[in-house]
Length: 81
Image 1: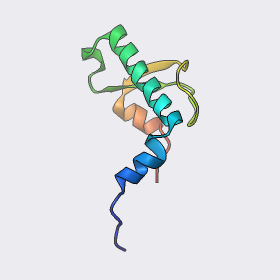
Image 2 (image 1 turned 180 degrees about the horizontal axis):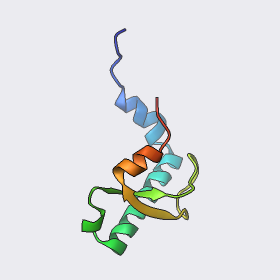
Image 3 (image 1 turned 30 degrees about the vertical axis):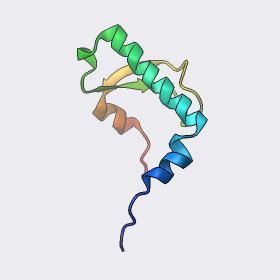
């Protein structure tokens, strides 16, 4: 079976450019900035900000967060196809 090339432009148009997804991305970036301000940039090197109890959809603005390793955060995430 021949794999089709991934159409990144289509992926952006259909998912990443949606207003709801832009807001979620902005919330993730804001959480990261807040953690850097609190703990310092060096403390977050190689780590990610994990949103606790968040859903796959909806805003992440007021969701509590914690700093975890990339491995721990990726392990907790659902598998993608």
